[in-house]
Length: 267
Ligand SMILES: NC(=O)c1ccc[n+]([C@@H]2O[C@H](COP(=O)([O-])OP(=O)(O)OC[C@H]3O[C@@H](n4cnc5c(N)ncnc54)[C@H](O)[C@@H]3O)[C@@H](O)[C@H]2O)c1
Image (cartoon, rainbow, N blue to C red; front, side, top):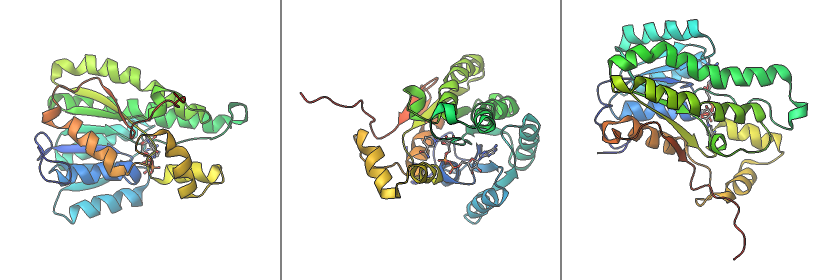
């Protein structure tokens, strides 16, 4: 077995992976990891130029990749993306439902109503629609589905209520789908990263009037590894779970958070 950057991986090499929100951040790292391990990659995103940039970067390494302009909140858009991806790269074996937004920050009472609803739409419907659109292909391939949550979806952090509600909400569908699709040899899991160094982290830092490094030292101090994660570190965990050596990892909510701990009391 090798890591995502070390070469081919059984169950990944030669198959098609579809990644939502692939234009930036963690999604772009997933695209890179799957391509490095030998998969062809469909990069779905509303950021058309970003998805094209990621797909072109992969194609330059002589790995098949396409960018598809698609909105995870629209089932019609996902259905069209599923048809295009299949036509171009073959059936999807691995679906990574990664796209998400952080939504409105700050206290609940001050939350803009439209922004709250939009967050629930992108972060919850934005998981169920791609799964609905791609599941037949994934079942035919006995593949995997990975859902992007956030470690706050297992515990609860203050502020950003719509975001945290959404990240809690996806564990139920994940477990139901793992049951529903098991007879097709499909595994369904969810990844719960801690703070990952992407544009999302900068949005939070800015909202709190902090520089990047101030935000990192403040926010990562409740982790055993006291730093932000790199997007590639999430992708490395996800690609292993998607690969054949992880055949017994199923219906799991997997934290990838540097060892987030409860505040410690002096002994
Ligand atoms: N950055 C973190 O600290 C962190 C931690 C844990 C989990 N996550 C989760 O990981 C996922 C990726 O986060 P990121 O930090 O890479 O964010 P990002 O903002 O860097 O990337 C998100 C991508 O999703 C795309 N997107 C947004 N709405 C979309 C839509 N309606 N349809 C299609 N694509 C859409 C964006 O265009 C963007 O390319 C999200 O689900 C996020 O909640 C992030």
